Length: 93
Image 1: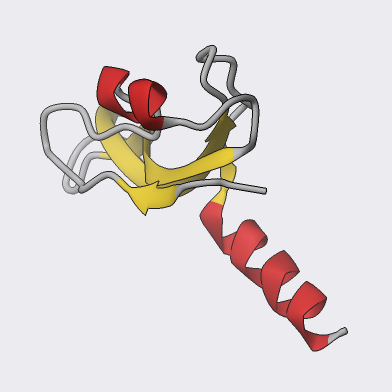
Image 2: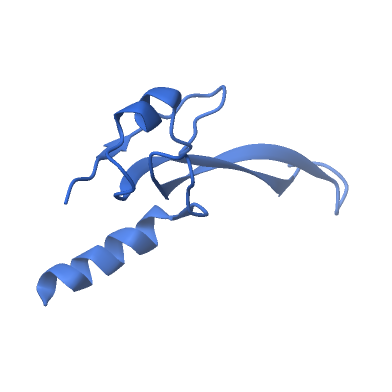
């Protein structure tokens, strides 16, 4: 069995957990490969000192993991912290 697990760095202009073309080219067969990256999501924040209910939208990033194979098929990203907790439980058994 062969697989790859690696990270993508956090960037202000579009960090991602989507495998790159190079990632896909280096993947072995249909074995699972993992990429830890950052999933962008929008959030609403209360504007300090403004009228109650006035909000602004900002972009936040959270660590997440995607699993993919050589064809580019990938899982829905899942939360890194949950992945970490699950892995720790599995390693104890």
